[in-house]
Image (cartoon, rainbow, N blue to C red; front, side):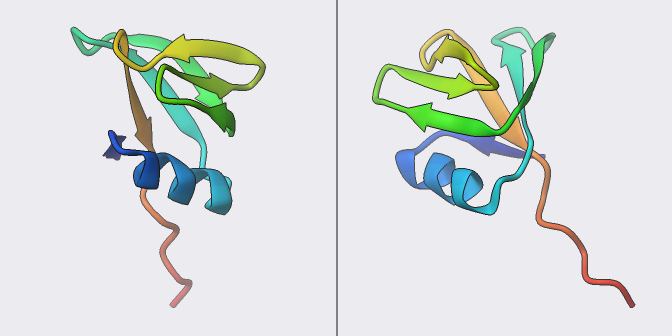
Amino acid sequence: MKTLITDVDLLSVALTQARVTVYEKDGRIADYGGLIEKYTPESVKIAGTYFRRGEYVFKAESARKKPE
């Protein structure tokens, strides 16, 4: 899983519509998340819920592997 830190990280995941999971700073899952609907310098809106960027860690699944 990739940790989303910068605006570019969030934009990339939003455009590819990858599922994002929200974690507490101590590593516990806060919310199983969903798709990024909106983000600002202060917060990220995922599946209708706003999460403060300074309080949570956002992680997205890696890009899908191509079928062989």
